[in-house]
Image (cartoon, rainbow, N blue to C red):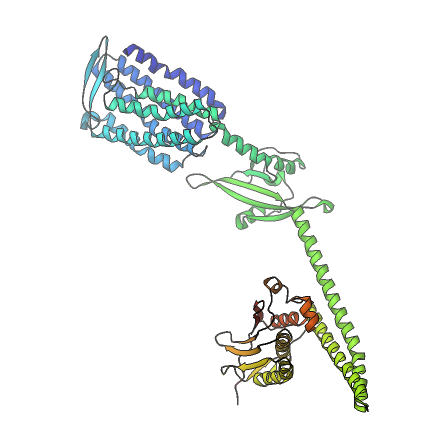
Length: 591
């Protein structure tokens, strides 16, 4: 390749650079454009300085032009790898600290170049290589040059890798863009390797600046064609304008420097948006301490608008920081939560109405149960008098049936009253010392006949660690055990029913009551509803065994009032185990 043609090509980098800058100028706010322009300036300066080195006639002048190339060369590694990282990250530039670190070796190389005659670390020596009417400067490279050259090769290699992967993985690129990006990645590496190995059309001719120049043009074509340079700015603008939230951008004070469409709507009620006004001027309804509350709490809620059309707004602040850690400004995001606030209040009103209805229902049930129980007690009293005076077995049998039915009805009424009082919050617990073992013994005697009639083994056991006396509500604890043991006997056709009491020691002592049976068992689906009022396991079993579906609901409510809980494990056809945990007070000392 003739040297004159080489000089023409080197000078062609100037118009190419101007074309690239002109083409990319509309997107000069993009990090990719800024880095591409820096790359173009560096390559153009290098090409022009290198052409003057070739044209110089004396060795000393050639050396000066060779040294003049290094400030432009120093730009290239930083701009090159910065561009590759930015494209790889789809428009997000690397941190300023990384770019500063990349500039360390090029910057430190500059004083070594200009003081080379003192130490010869960059060039050990140099001479002229005549080529026709011109000549090339041949140099013997020193250690500093090799450090800088290896550094450049590593940086170029990183950029080559990133851009190469990007060319094969980015789906938005056409074939020409992929080829251009691969050329942009490969040309600098090829040029540097040819010069270092002294391989090329003319030995000693450095084609690296020309390769970098062509690389910048190829990168500009590839990125411009795919929208890499402007897509981030376009996306940000589009997202910002499409947001349902109002967004104000503030400087380090209270001055608004930008706002999206929703924010301009807020400002339109007060004369319209104009950059440079303070936020309170654009939005007078803000509370006086709005900036202090934002700094302290990060956000708050305000009410805006007329009383008949009040809007509920949520304000949230996001600090904008520079790379050096200093504050740049604040993004204020305003979300209209009127619909959510209205729904929340409607839900609260509906919940309050439902709770009021539930309390009214509970009071009605309790009142009606009392009203029914009073005449029922009179009926039972009269039936008992008739039974006492009955002279024949038939009359006595009929009256006994009336008494048993009445007592069953009274039991149901008592359950209804308990459920109503528990739901309305009027069920009160009493606390008095009671003998837990005596309570269990009475329970066993009460159900012994019913268990024997069905051929069941009824076992009741109180662990030796269970203290004798507790301060608690003996009637309600007995009611819990009666419901569980009664249900176990009712739904067990054969086998056994057992009641065991154990004492859980520790910082929170508790009485553990376990009722196990070998009855019909409960399905997994039914386990979820058996503690609900008026719910039973199976209609056929309920018709056979009787019951109102209130017993287990009362058990759970009483356990909850005592601070305890009830759980169940069951297998259909094998049986069930109910476990009650009651955190009772510390037992009384036995005298």
